[in-house]
Length: 135
Length: 460
Image 1 (cartoon, helix red, strand yellow):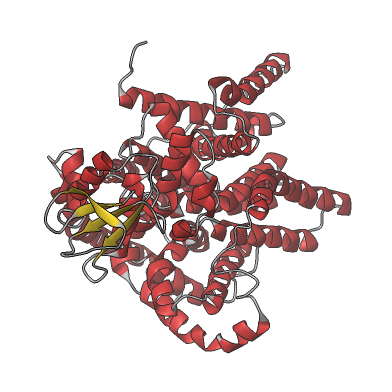
Image 2: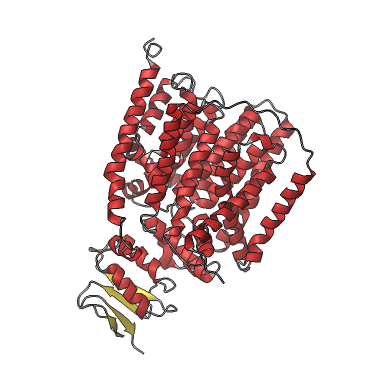
């Protein structure tokens, strides 16, 4: 009886109103941030902003200094870098492939990293550089 | 050679995709062209086009054939010629007088504006950033780049253990679709490739509306379509380059055309449902489960329906034949490469594993309720579905619409089973995927909601 006596038209109007309220909330709180972070920025700036500070420039540096047919190992501080950054590095550097025992080691933001049998190939900064397997 | 502007090339690539899909729909529905509206065919064309084009690219690649213009155009030019021949050979019937459409009232105009603005908003948001989300990069964009630069399959990416995070066993519709856009552009542009997703958003929304309009009045159809289009999670996945919105689009179409076939028994609806079911399985591994659920729903319907046994057998056989033939190349390739899911495999689907993990049901249900009552992502969509489900509990499975509810329940049960057997940390797995899985059943649940409330709500 209670359900039958409900004014469905009123329910419909309230339902639609609540729906619109939550929609507007989403536009303001979530979507506006996306546009704020991207409007007026170049493609390169957007890609740079999406990655950890300095990583995109390091990727561009590696693109220039590692031949496309070669493969690489990516060494970084696992506590400081989100795992997704590894996927982004892998994506941007393809066709160079991120594999184990590669002839190039990309070292990002780690001081004093050394590996036996490898020598400095190119350096972007004191903590970010490329090692290459010694001939 | 004139270098066309990227947007012109992109538009051309998208139009070709529409054209291929349009010709397939025409070929499927020559027996009765009146059963689908013009706008409905437009909404269906792109998803169908992209599904068959990527399948064609895959088949050419595994046979070592290149994606040359000749190889790509050949079957579609042939199909076009067949369609043209049928068109000219058909006896023209005098056009039937169409019922005059009533003019749009203010509310309907406002709702149409709202839907259009939502599509524009999603498009702008999609193009605000390049492909960057974790899975979008690791699973799809990396493979797309590899396929594009190689001009075919990169078996190393699909086999090398260091790329295991890219889910090598995942079907290849999305990577090949992105690759298709890159080929249309003539370069690798991971901004413009995101055009795929707003189009899938538009298609899913349009298909939803086209189906709903068959059963409820225009105002109600527009209202529910606007509501679906404004669900935050639905819009987010129209922009982030994940495969979940394409999968949602395919699954929604597959189940709703199956539902329509149950009602009207028009063969093109069954063929469309089968084609869309295949496309769902060709998009994501979860799609295979959704395909099996569709087959189960069809089998249950046939078992209960009064049609002749021969017709039942033919209907089920046709459905199975379409999906098996189309999926065979991918299944064969997957087996030859020994690609296996890290979640659903022989090691995880064992009675002992299922038994040992049954206690996981509670944290899984707890996660689901967070979504049911989570307006930040879902607005009040799931709350509405739940309330109406409880109020109508006695009639939920009474007529054909009950099959939609049953299918949605089976989907949720299937995903729950996957969480029970997952070898990954349950908390991590739930937090990273539950919202996506609920997206897959959102449009069909809202379709059920609309049909279940049409007699009650005076708005319609």
